[in-house]
Length: 140
Image (cartoon, rainbow, N blue to C red; front, side, top):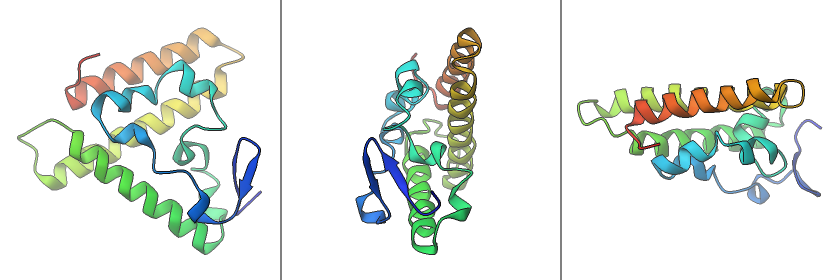
């Protein structure tokens, strides 16, 4: 449904009722939780930025603005945990954009093949998680 967000059995069009921004960007270790089998399976309560990436452009203007604002806030949070001192603030933000895109893409692809090829789905998550940890300097 364009302009609507569904979480479990609750449906809302009011952006104020949408979930808090993705917790995955609040700390480096939490970021890797987004790329876990549990998060992959929990579509109803998973990351709305990955779930609605394609549909966001068809949302009503208020919902679209809320989506964009939330995404920008998450990118800012992720930029704060990129632990590479030699990067400038702009470079950290650019790295965060790439990493967040990788997380969302990996989650979408892993979900897409989870039933048809569980081993591939797990490998997508595992590979993206390892790359993410290496690029933000987090222990796996």
